[in-house]
Figure 1 (cartoon, each protein chain N blue to C red):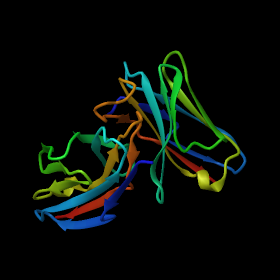
Figure 2: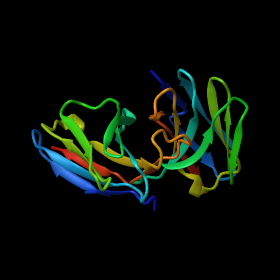
Figure 3: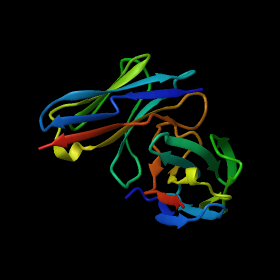
Figure 4: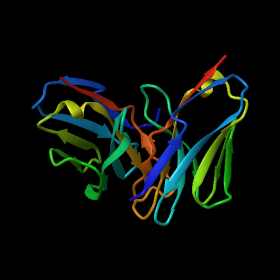
Length: 109
Length: 115
């Protein structure tokens, strides 16, 4: 069974204070690791797909990296609008995604 | 706006009742997924349909059922409701069967409260 564990559960940063979110996974035959952003009262919104160890993807202040056991979402100089819950998901041998419980990020001005 | 429409947005009902949640996928998307999100469990996959056929099943209770119609909209039926069924129910869609890029388009969810 595919498993995803995200840490920390919640993170509070000051504007401009860089940090990283962690996603550890157990999957049989990784066919993709995915990051989503979820704002309160909204559905998750796709950010990145990573397929193999060593791969990196960037979007504005976010950079996602992947190793054989975990992924990191690095947030550089965050702004209050980056406040959201960030979800990590994996796809193994099935067509569906298994999600972690997420990291709730709050960036204060 | 993801292009995925879910109705109703909010629903309050009593234990033992039955409700139907509706989802219209993005235009052109053939795959529909249903997820349940609660505070303690996170996003849990329930079921997937592709072009009208069931393709994958997750942690879906026997009291729950779903279908996808010829026009590709989908309905999730929840019966004999219990307090623990209170949650956000999300529908997502993708073009392909396997969502190879992992890019699912989620609706805004239906919040079910069972009293």
